[in-house]
Length: 235
Image (tube, rainbow, N blue to C red; front, top):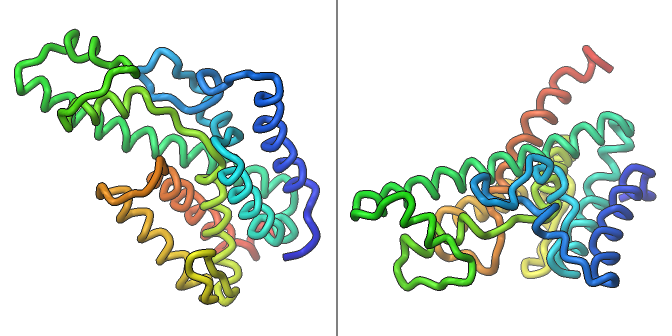
């Protein structure tokens, strides 16, 4: 890690402002800036971007901003400001879109099951009240997908992490709960496999958007791989 670059610094400052200021002013910007399900009344297309600057807790923003600094700094030093910003916004928006597509598929799948059980579309939509709690698993699924908003820079940071791994494969990385340094070329795939596993099962701990992580990583890999492959043609 080197000294923080200007772009990284400004991104961190913007994230911190959007986290701290609303708390001091007692403002809830979730309905406006967090990413909502497309059929939800609070959904807006701008949320694919603005949600990447919102965070739910101090630990959430601390983890993401440290990741942005640690892995983004060498990338910006190598790519430059404009290229890094394009990459960062692309991975953030890409993560949001892929996360939404996965949720949309899961929602429609559960929705169709309710239709098969005899419910009408109007009856189902009346059940989408966020204050209602259901014992039925299918109703829990459609209600949660419809009403849960997503926020955080994690998708973009995962894209940055994957790009870092492509360019610095032998860099040693470790996690708090697994403090043994492992080369990035092994560490990052293991991390992504964990996200894929938790995203596809019910063993996930906490409200973590695993498919946003995977989406950001996928978009980041495609862009970084293309740039790395063609760096001598376009540099």
